[in-house]
Length: 518
Ligand code: ADP
Ligand code: MG
Image 1 (tube, rainbow, N blue to C red):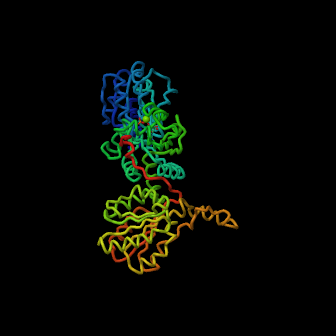
Image 2 (cartoon, rainbow, N blue to C red):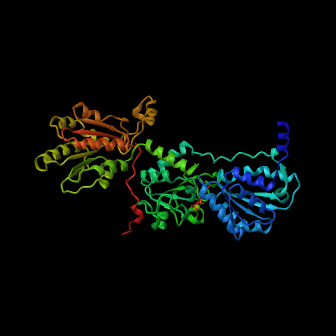
């Protein structure tokens, strides 16, 4: 009869030890390390019966170290099972170590018998798992009263709390992400420090992309090693002291400014070094130093945010010249004029032949560019067949002789004009700032003298006369338009390259770390 069946089932008893084992199993616990004795032996046996691996160790300290490493390696807490009194005391070292390392750990200790009331603590089991893996990971302790282990309880009176989900992924504030991207881009000597928080977060893929896209040198902490392989060309592990000492911007990905990193203080660091801190633990932010930007969130998610932000940011001089240099034929004529455009371009763009570079010269004259380019194109045609003329102009400089584009088109000279456009002389305004100035009655009273009309389509001067015109805003568009212009010898072209209006920094790469002072 169904009724009697039900009655039978409801009287089925189960021991406290089995309940604990089942609760652990429900929380996806795979490994228990420990040393058994009264009152926890039954728990270990019950766990084995449920398929949990039990590893008996020789000292609770080692057991606890092992369990905490499981937490770091798998992201779910490893369990350490010990007896009351000395067992627990021995394990304290492991708990402290797990806490200091920010590694999840579930410590289960037996204790003396308690009355029923205190046994309510058992219900805090799932909460313990959550505490160990949510926020900053760490150790937590569950106390199992001895009388509970052998207590028989009615099966139907039990309800196991569902497996605690992996922690939610938190992202940093968008404005902080943008600010960090800008600080990194304007750094002269940036450095990324990769800590074990990055390893724990499985941030390897995003951090590697970030290192490569921003061309950042990186330094792993001891356990941050391998997030990006040590043999990566951007790894400056071999020059650790120098890297720390000379960096002007340091991004910390899941690494604390503790003794391992010399507290982030001089003389091991520049006194005015700017720190960008990425950590999941709010209390960690601002420890020892005043960070320039704090990014509270998961390392993997935040590095992905930084990647996305990089894509949407305008290019700077360095990015532009890097891509130009990559495609520049070794035997070409380089004509250049402008302020930042000419200064920074000179350091990046390479010449391999004599008399193949023409620029503002001794007199620092603006307006010479297109005339020089036309002359170079004539000489190339008559004396160096096949050589191209690349004319790299600032947007202001281009204005001095822009109408010579008509001459270039009239004689069909296959000159490639690059206008590096920052909306002004030295620097300009972006569209938002520009619109602000237009709110004033009299723009001549407020428009900064360096500003030119933002987002001017200089390429249309070329298309007006039948040449090819490109308006580019991203590295990909720049690469593509350069490739097409170089391939097309039948026509002149003008590539209008939009860059960050405030970009001024000179190009630097991380060889400052490995180069000697000589
Ligand atoms: P290291 O010894 O490699 O320098 P630390 O132990 O000093 O690393 O720092 C690790 C940091 O990583 C801790 O501050 C911790 O809060 C943080 N952390 C742990 N997990 C994450 C995560 N998923 N995302 C971001 N930070 C994390
Ligand atoms: Mg650290």
